[in-house]
Each structure stands twice: as C-alpha cells, then as structure tokens.
Length: 110
Length: 110
DNA sequence: TATTTATATTGCAATATTACGATATTGTTT
DNA sequence: AAACAATATCGTAATATTGCAATATAAATA
Image 1 (cartoon, rainbow over the protein chains, first blue to last red):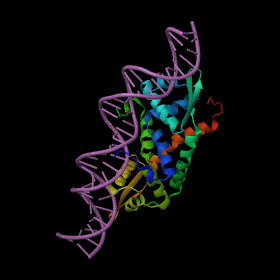
Image 2: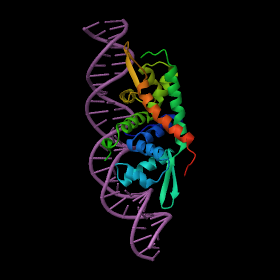
Image 3: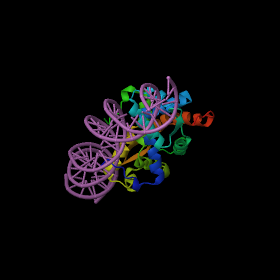
Image 4: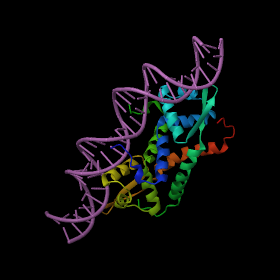
C-alpha cells in the first residue's frame, strides 16, 4: 500500500519514527552538520552548500522544521535557521535507552 | 524523481541517513523496543507483538538487518534476532555531537 | 517421509518521497 | 513604486516504501 499503519502504534513509536525518518536523508544530515559547523544559520548559505536545487533544499528544510529538528525566523530578507533542541531531546532519550541496554547486555543469544 | 542523489553526498552522510531511515518507521521502533524489553528474541514472538501481517514483519526485520541494527541466527527452527551494536554505535556518535553542540550553544540567533 | 511450524520471497496495488522548473511571495534597496 | 534578493509553493515525473495474499523454503517432529 505505501501507507504506514500509524493508528496501530503508540504515539511515542510514531513520534520517534517521524523524527528518525526526518533525519534519514543525506541532504538533511548535511544540513544538520552544516548548522553545527558554522554555528549560525542563513538559508542561502545552505543552498550553496548542498548539491541540490533551491526548491529541493527548501523542501528538506521544511521537513526538518515540521519534525521539530530545526527552527527558523526572519532575519532581514533572509531566514535564520538553527537546530531545535525540542526534536533532538525526544530522540536522545530513545538512543540512551538503546545504548545503555547494549552496554549492559551480557547474556546475548546471538 | 523519488531517487535520492546519494552520489553527491559523503559516505558518512549516506551511512547515517540509511541508519536513521531504517529506524524511521513505527514498526521498526516497536521491534527495537520489544527486543530490549524481552532481552531475548524469537521472531514469532515479534510477529504476535506487532499489528502487521507476517510477511510485513519479515520485511521490516530484513531492513533492520541490512542496516546493521539487528542480527539473527538460527535457533532450532526459529530465528533468534537481537540488537546489533554495530549499527547503533555508528549513529550514536552523530547524536553525541549534536547533543553536545546543543548543550554548549549559547550564542543562538533563533 | 509426511506433516507441522517458523520464516522468507514474490508479486502487486496504493501511497509516499525526491527532485526540479516555473512561479509566487516577502522583505530590501534604490 | 520598481527592481532585486531570498525563500516558499505548485505541479509533475520518476522512483521508493508499505502492506499483504499467495507461495516457497527450511528445520523439527510425528
């Protein structure tokens, strides 16, 4: 079908999946890495940095914004985008649980 | 197009994106959570646990396995699946960089 | 060896994602 | 106000993903 059966999963599962999915594209990884690297944020900058056309970059920025992974506000006639701790803090907890499980797990069957 | 332009991104960016994408589905989040919860792993168990048909679960397991997030080997006539630290350790570093950036960032423009 | 049990694969329909050209919008500058 | 610059939206083509019924495979057991 192509349609994820979100209704049959918990809200937490859907939320985590949405966040991970939003991160799951090389262009969006590159955007996140670039925002960290330059420690500031003007969109035109990002368009020049990525090997994609401006509308495509704009679309990726929108997806990151919808997921709560970046936020942006007008700064003159450019837009200032930067990382949004909201989204990242939600997924952070999930990975902490996974990692502490993997560190402590001794009785592995595999 | 629907085709990600992987050739134009770094190997690291593509690898991180692949991992995040594999995690980015509620069924696959549920599988990971379940493996942690029961601290062991038989696939039939997972099929019963998820609101999806057996072939669909099998497909999701395959995707997690391809990404290096779970591993499985035969255990009698069932298969023993469990978390694979390989995949998780790769994405762990990425989130650590993001989180330490977000914690230290003071001069925010947003 | 026939049957059962557990899991994988195939094939396909429905929907989602990616990418970009063309165009619209919004704010700035002259 | 007109022109410009930066970004968003629309429309659309190509491809990917999701889900499942049907079927195949592989190991265990009767």
